[in-house]
Image (cartoon, one colour):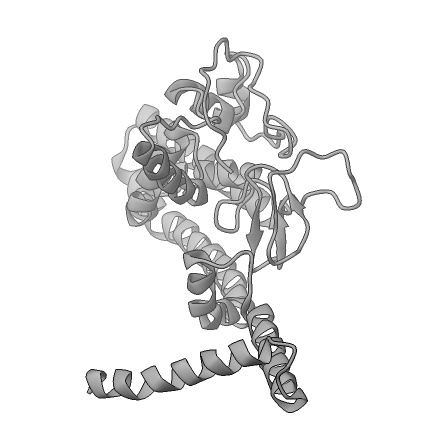
Length: 304
């Protein structure tokens, strides 16, 4: 079948080339020359319509995921409100069960020192959970400032058509770019959510155990979940060229955790981690200078 098709298309292509060759000559009939010019003009128009400087596998994936993006824009954004209500209802039900069912049993069976410890520890956990979760749901995402030309940018957002600073990505829920985006979280919200998970009851912590471990690994590496995929692609690209990839934002495991939690001095482990704190994260989300307590930083490749 393929051989018959090539036999039919071969003479047709040869005739078309002969017509184009004749049409390019000055002595050819005006009608033939006009047909050749229209053919070439139509060919240029078709190529201009299909041309895309951003074309490639990423563009094909974006086009394939357009139905999912539509679902996110119109349906899934309301799931956030549902999840917030569910967390509030579940946390309130746990507190009610603890007071109505567990507390009378503890009062009858526990000794006074053990009762005081459980009373202090449980209420300390409850205060931290409520405080950090409230901070998480009320802290707005950080957006790149508009109308400024003095901001260092690394690329142009294909959705916003606006310059993007380093570590900034487009959020389909916000429908705009978010500074240091990790899913729908900015740098400060991610810290608050991590602390709220740490102080949740053990049953909730176990249910979120896999997610907690995964983000703990990312924090230790100085990455977000989006940067993890970008850095893996960049690492493979550089390995093919015999080069080594290093994350520009990785300051070492301990320093990454100190930066994530906002620990600048030793007392901050108490005032900013063990106690409720609404301190701002290090930096402004636009310029990523190393924190002052990082003594050395190796030469590396910037991940965008």
